Image (cartoon, rainbow, N blue to C red):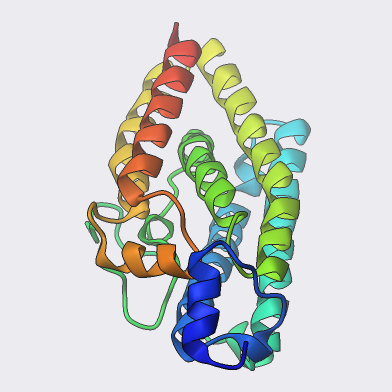
Length: 249
């Protein structure tokens, strides 16, 4: 399949690529963009959450937070290695962004990405204490699981396999967050948790991108995406509605 059009037709029919050599230029660019967004988000998420580890109310909570930070760094490194196979300068990449930098809490980035940083916008906002960290982890964790299920079906096989390995860990992060949220509510912090859920809900929702995305059509043809943004967003909304109802009832 040396002809680019043949490869693109193969991908559109559900084919898989297993190495960078046959990847057409347009496919390569979108794949690298997808990987950069994931890596930036994992590294920024880990750096932000690391700052609140010692705010955990007990050793159990601090261990759980430390585990989440460790595994997010590991997830970013796994995908960064795949980027390296495409020629990315992985050593420079890891030092080019201030991963722990955050904007003001009341700023609103909407869905517009900041130049030079591919993290999801929700990861530019600061975390305000332990209850806020737990609420953010639950809402963003649910989004991550839904998005990873989508990405684990992508047409670049090494990346799909990496996401399949990462998914159970992210599901466990979500479970730890739900356990932490339920404990906070049961111990009298329901109002604080509810305020944090309200704060993060719209910001996490924006991480799914806008509806009717033109890029989605191209990604679908490449086999890199399968469900549109609005379908993933609706699945997330249903998940969060159920979680909030079970937590506060």
